[in-house]
Amino acid sequence: MRVCLASTSPARLMLMRQIGVEPLTRAPRVDEEAAIARVEESEGRTLPPDEHVLLLARLKAADVAGTLAAEGFEGVVIGGDSMFELDGEVLGKPYTPEVATRRWQAMRGRTGVLHSGHSVVRLSPGSEPREAHAVAAASVSFAADLTDAEIDDYVATAEPLQVAGAFTIDSLGAPFIERIEGDPSTVVGMSLPTLRRLLRGLGVALADIRDTTRSS
Image (cartoon, rainbow, N blue to C red; front, side, top):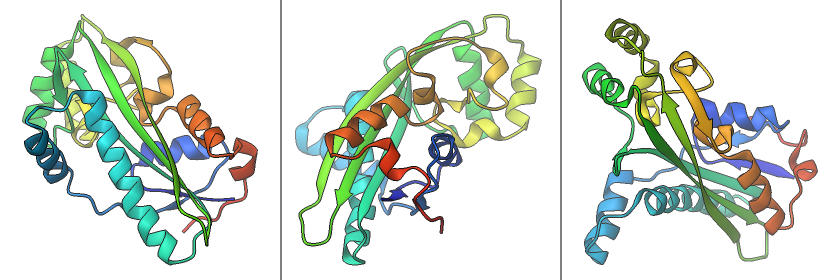
């Protein structure tokens, strides 16, 4: 069965390859800020982190699934989104060195929660799309003895600028993380146990998608 990852995230692609899947990749056409603002305005409230990431994951998967369905694609489309929460504040990608530096100075010695939204859409020509979704979360504790020099050095690598929360656990940021409570793959970008459950709910086993996809 074919698989499409509705994401250009290298971390999510790595996770798929880790379980033996080589997916197609498509970039979703979703204006994330506009989508969140639209829902929050219509409902008159600020979306909590779990609803925030789930909404975006579902929109991303739906956008790519809509395009692929028109092409006669048969298989599953996987969408995801992640946000880091510290003291009730949602922290996305910092984008600039200045923001990343301030973020790390605030995080050292602290514990936050990484929220990861998942949406899986099963497409079969001639049938209506079927979708399953869920949110996974894991707490992340940062080293208390992290120095300003170490922060500056890490930020200078540019790695933290384009990742939720300004950190990674599978690359250069790993030495600064003391503890994770929950599924580690959630922090990387997508909870593999959660993905397995969602696929199973749509009648798809991991064996169905392993080593049978084509890259593009």
